[in-house]
Length: 217
Image (cartoon, rainbow, N blue to C red):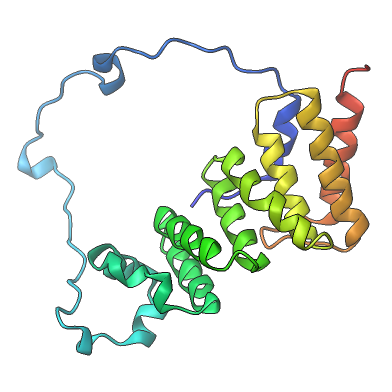
């Protein structure tokens, strides 16, 4: 899963990248290659197979081995049916999937869970965070903005909204909205520290820098 670095926030002050035409398919794939001789090939060891029967699976082992759990869900996608879960279970399973780098499976689970329990701000927060990490800021904002209406005092929601806005194409409107969201984080919780390590002091510094660099009206 991609994690958010503070430098991403500072990147908003950089000029927009110049758009280039997509390369031809052959250029994208690169030159033709040939199979190296057997002695030069990298050895590959297949992961151990999962037990074939459900009764042989140890839930504690699955919970403690994110990769095994991810492989189990990939082989049994019907097990991510939120109709069979409580919201806390959905959050826990999403966290295990994320630790096993099954980000898209986690996003699907959180999407379904947030639709089933729209009143649960914690599900919206988790879903929004994953969407931001996947580079889908518009989708994240569609999830986070209704959630912040239900829980205006949640600093994490404001922080994630700021991140999503700074991932959109650069514009004064997006920057102003992002600064307001980031400043709200510090106002709500002067000691805020995000699970990814970003502190209130970091957020304040970024907001001040963006505000200082915005062109005058």
